[in-house]
Length: 200
Image (cartoon, rainbow, N blue to C red; front, side, top):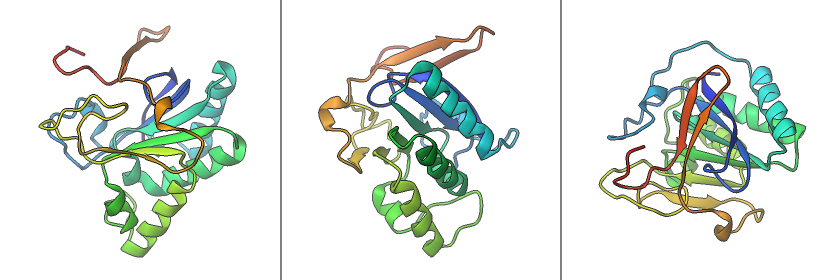
């Protein structure tokens, strides 16, 4: 799969301490997206096995509560994402799994999404069901810069936070925040939700 980055630990991308897998590639083209470096489908292919090993290591070393998929657009690599989540759930059954997607739940339920590996409507519905069955929560819907929002994990009012299991309650989702991480090599990663009017 194409991966933009894996963040070893974040508190801004869901409840508790979480690793974040940012997939590389998105065709949705939401105007004003602040993560546009993840849009092009470019870069080396990384095996599911290697991504899984990386995430499992971070979960163990950092004693994490969960893993969140972001991007880019995870559902545009749905075959790889479904395989990754199935392997992750098998490796660490107790882990919380969340996802950000620009697609609405209705679009996904009806199989109306574009995937990098060709997918017809029926297989799209089936693949989404496979992904959904491993998710505890997902934030769904395209970013709309004309509908600013300060609700947890949502940057525009049209986006919805869906709870797919009883693992989390809405009160566990903290206020929006921004994190800046600097690795030993000097690589700087900014993640989270910049407050409206405040420079990221």
